View 1 (tube, one colour):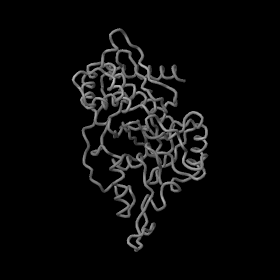
View 2 (cartoon, helix red, strand yellow):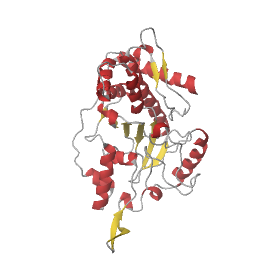
View 3 (cartoon, one colour):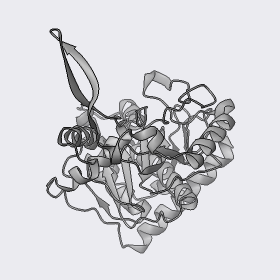
View 4 (tube, helix red, strand yellow):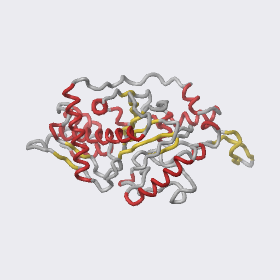
Length: 354
């Protein structure tokens, strides 16, 4: 199949160092899998990815027929004693399906997914090989490449923070999130020098599997400020993604997007999306359907039934406009506060866990 794993996975290959798709340890609480081995397995992953991504065509992994299109009679099945032919094709994992769903972008574009984990990926016509292993060289089910970075600390970590905050009169997670965002909206960007390093379960980008969460820069009276703590947590998750974005831009030729297409459950939060836009300094657009992976999988199936390439099928769909674009703040003081907070985030992360 095209790829596997919750974040796109590594393509199956018979000559990988593990005799197939690289295996990774399960993440805590069974939340998906990592697409890049950590610690002792990192060197083997780099050898495998460099060998396979630079030396082999995605066609050998992603498709058995032209441009992701299925072929008739490629599989047989039996029903009540009668044999019949059926269509089959390589199936995409979530990331590949997610790209197809919103018809994300051509080469140079970028998609940001705010989900249990955070993913940022682009679309490329040629493989991108990162010797450091930070940018994963996935192959798209339509025949292109998906250079991708993934962070473990994202929406699931924010749920943990919400569970620990004292928010009176709020029982459901949704109500707690609404109350926390309202309180956090009253806190200035940068949180007055407070930084939340969100690595409660370790982190993969940057590659610090032994890292843990840290709340730094607190002054008297701040520990009980739910709005401050929650905003610091949201900013911390965002800065981790921004750091990964910079690493990806340094590695991927031509990757310098002027806009981010945002998907995933976190994209529904206007509060979080404004922080992302202000921190990245980029406008955010949104597909009409937020469940982009499910829609992408449906597009893959539709293309298979029609017998046409996936991209051709997607281009014919009329999805309609998404919600209004979110634009970054033009206020110079706001930009300065976010930039200083981001620089502190990177410096503190390196000092504690390098």
